[in-house]
Image: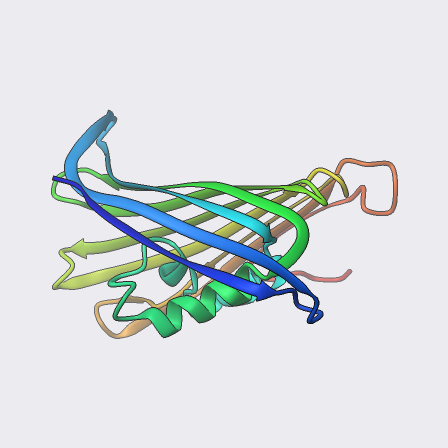
Length: 213
């Protein structure tokens, strides 16, 4: 038994109003027999995405980390019932762009039995007008159980490898996390680096904050 879910967007106008089209499709498969990967990891869902004349807006996705946008983008719960939120998230994160194409893979992993942690992961390659690699990840830890989550940790992260600009950026933040149903847990981290010879050839790592001095 396998459950397939597909959702997407088709536009017949480009952002500037000119005639044209753009296409974005996500397909996921779950409810199959879990696949053991070793070291306690189990593959429980897979998926893929295709974008034609579509790009990704890293600034929108980065800002959405604080609102747990990845929960909507990666394996959304009941995509049909939550269609307005899914469509809004897709339109903002993956806007139309002539000459850009997206190809991605998605997976959901769990760790240990009973499940101690769930990992939603995506790797998306953009090619055509420019070449970039987008990595998205959401880690959820609910202990001892999902119904009685005395420890609740949700971490959203994204990374962008820009082959044209020769830069790499990584952002991670805790969202909707708490301890003993009462104490909020928060925090963020960021990395910026460049391997070219221009002004972007720098390195910065920040965990919790950055002092300009």
